[in-house]
Amino acid sequence: MNRARLKNRHHSLLILVGFSILSACSSKSPPEQAQPLPSPVVQEAVVPTDLPPATSTAIPAFLPTEAEMEQIVEKPRVKTNIQASNPNEVSLVNGRPTFVEFFAFWCPICQALAPVVHELEAEYFNKIDFIYLDIDNRQTDSFKRTLGYRFQPHLFLLDGQGNITQQWVGYASQEELKIAFDLALE
Image (tube, rainbow, N blue to C red; front, side):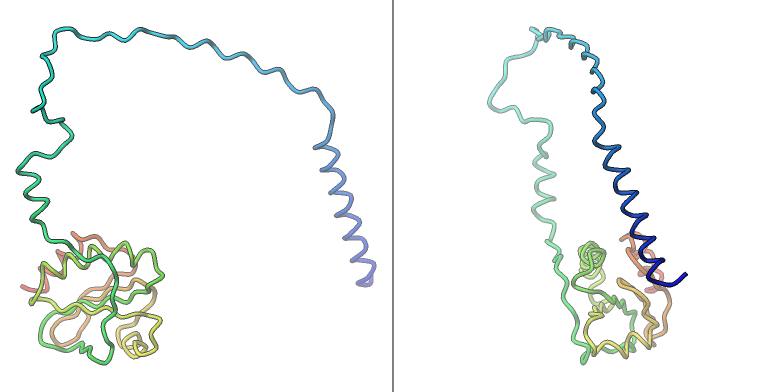
C-alpha cells in the first residue's frame, strides 16, 4: 500500500472515531434523578455555666510563653537566599573539612536546602569551609569534573586534602549532614 492511501485510510479512521465520540456525548438520554440529601441533624450548643469569668490578663493557650518568646527573639536569623562562591577564590585543598554544594538558582530543591545548609554553616563557622558552586557558571566546570558532579543539588564533604569523604545527590536532612560534619571533625 502506498503512503497516500495509508494516510487517507488513517484520516478516515480518525474521522470515524471522532463522530463516534461526538454521538456518544450528545445522546439525548434523560438525566438520572438525583436522590435527595438527608436533612442535617441540628443540635443546640451546650454552654457550660460553671466557667470562671474572663479577665483581661488571661493568655490564650496557643501563644508562646515569655520564656519561649525570649528564645525565639534571641535565635539568630539564618539567611535563606542562595549566593554562589567565586570560583576563582575556591580551593578544595585547605587543611580542614570542606562542604561543597553544586546548586542552581532555579532549582526548588536547592532553594529548600538553603536554610538547612546556611544554619549548619553558622554552627560550624571556622571549623568547616562552605563552598557554593553555581552549575550554570562555566567557571565551575573544572570543579564538576574533579568531584564527579551528577545532578543538582550535589553535595560533597571533603577532608583537608580535598578527598571526598561523603556525598549526597538531592535533598539531605540537617541531621544527616550534622552527623557527617561531626565525624569529619573527629
